[in-house]
Image (cartoon, rainbow, N blue to C red; front, side):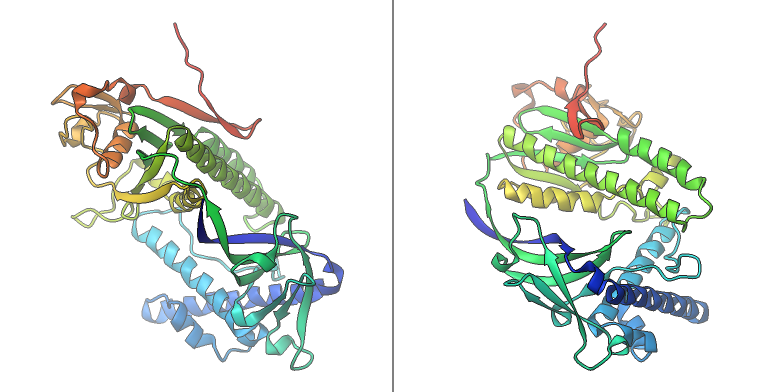
Length: 424
């Protein structure tokens, strides 16, 4: 076992909810008001100079605004930072051809302001782990006197002891829809296992099969997106029937959809790490998708097909990779990102590069050596070979490239299981 410091977020309930809810409501409403002021400011700046202000500019514009002092200064900065990040993400999607992307909207429920998450950084909270209490700072506008604050009594899970962590970096007050809860972002020292082996596996993330795996021993696996696509279709239909996209019913449906997607990502990342332990894998090589939305040399956005262009912005590749990394580190497995350059058009057996060899979305046929492969598994094997070259082709069969195992997510059990093979 080895020691390693990692970041973890722990959720805690608030035991004195009735005593502090009004004060927390005031902070949550204030965060929404500041967001809306920032949103209006972005509109004004865009209209005048054609430029969306970044976080620092937005803070400079609003530092003297009366709404800024409703929260602790660091909490106000975080609200404006989130707004700037949301605009940056939207603008990037628009620039790369995603016509479905909408700019961040105003935070409103009818004429009321909703309760937004409030983040407290180092100077905005004080933790007392002996008595399980945390002191949260108010903004000067909401204080009854200069030292006024909110004192929350919290309760974590039995296996979580905040007194043993390296440091608590942030505290967040989060409205769940029925009550407030606290999220503590901590630096934690953990024991990680020794690497289960020296083997490698390549992982190709995509919009048809979310993940395709190619193991060093010559074994492939596919994880289709069947359940997430079904959820997208189901929830889109249900949300479309709501009075408006900001209604309480639509909000609940979006939250449920998000929870199910998060569960899928957690379950898949856990399953892949477990499979790697079983196969003696010490290094997971994931395709780097940072350039997937970049433009072609002629300045045009890359064309992934009608549905592909839409799905491209729906699947949280970065989020999944983060989950995979922190689960893998517990098992002593390293996760490294590898360039995907030419991996989709290269033959993993002979190295022949030809775009036309990918005859359709799921099939790769090499015109040089005759290899027939599942296109995603072929890409995963090319990713793996960039770091760990294969043995000589004559030393192993290539049949696994064309017939990988398929794992489907079972909603009843909440786990992945091999798809049954149909035989004639």
